[in-house]
Length: 382
Image (cartoon, rainbow, N blue to C red; front, side, top):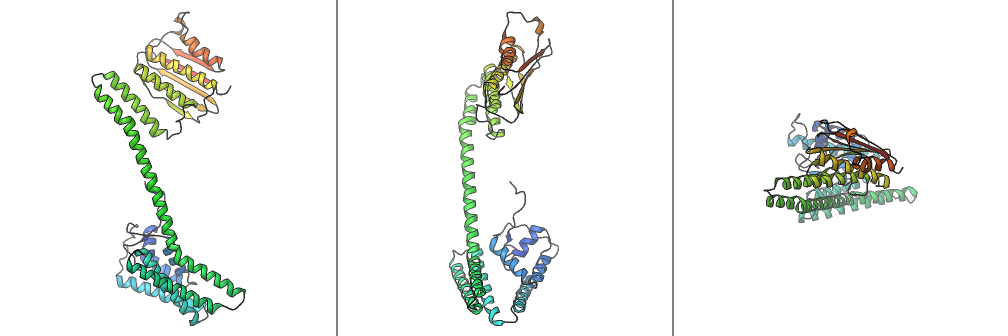
């Protein structure tokens, strides 16, 4: 699934030093030349470009699948190297300017920069190789040595010197340990994602084996019985539909809407008619009043399946603000409610009286040849 917003990665394919500029160009959709010029200009502003470049190098990863930068300007490798050289020169000039022209301070910082470059290159290219290990330790030694010289040079014996020593030490830790910490975190995140994916695959495989494959085997054995095949297919469709679309929200059968679904499934399996209930609203635990309405709705479904002479019964259940409404509709032969004999108590007792006793309302609308609609409403918990 694509991400809602792409994550920035450095480009290995178009990198000159670390792929930061080409990665930014592909991520932002701008010409890589302008990105490099912006970083170069930023380097002259208090070394801002260097800090931006270094920060993106430390805290992001390089990838062969980074977005391609626009092809509006093709630069030769020599031109890219020249721009990189200008960036280094601009960083040196900026450091000299802000150190008051003190070469004694700039030289250790240059050593730190070279060491960081070697260490970070080792991280990018794989510090597990022999060359990578050597490059990392050489770079780490240069960083530690350069920072040590800088701390000694800056030590004035006062609070400012101590604070500078602490800050430089923390900077050294970030420079050397930052990329390693990032890669450990990404490795852990990748492992978690792989574990979740494996668990999902195992769950899908188990469900397919326990339900779909077994149902298909039963259908093959009973292919000569179309009614049984249709019943098995409907039951399997209902199970898969609940698994795929309910997202586990109504797995507990002791809720109102789940009870409606269960009742529809029972009637569907019992009489071989198709009932695909539509349930909307916020589900809630099944209490006695809700159970009474569900049982009345089930009886309405049974009547439709037995007497309407149709293959499909429509059921719609809505639970909003604690008020439950269930509509059971068929487009079958229908009947005249006024002509129902007095000794027939199915609708009067099993549906209407049951709902009214629970504090709700029930209505039955029907006419010969026009089907039947049963509407049941009550407030759960009333």
